[in-house]
Image 1 (cartoon, rainbow, N blue to C red):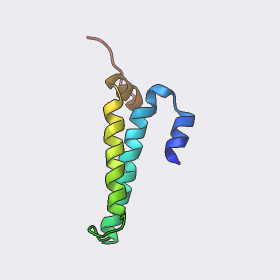
Image 2 (image 1 turned 90 degrees about the vertical axis):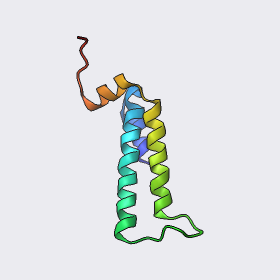
Image 3 (image 1 turned 135 degrees about the vertical axis):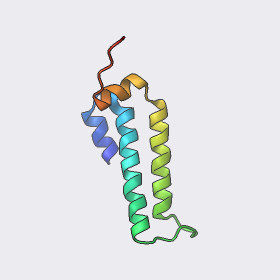
Length: 82
């Protein structure tokens, strides 16, 4: 759901850096929840740790597909040629 909101409200050139940042924040929240609740890691079912790992994988993939100019624009860093 948050990715759909991003796609609806951001320009297309900022979508991949924003998706990467959002995925990492979701992974952080999931891992913190798993750590705080002492959720088991090695079970036969899908756990919160699996969700956190999948979110990290999505964040890495989105970050790989973003270009440096897009990331600079997303972070608000002015890029001026020397």
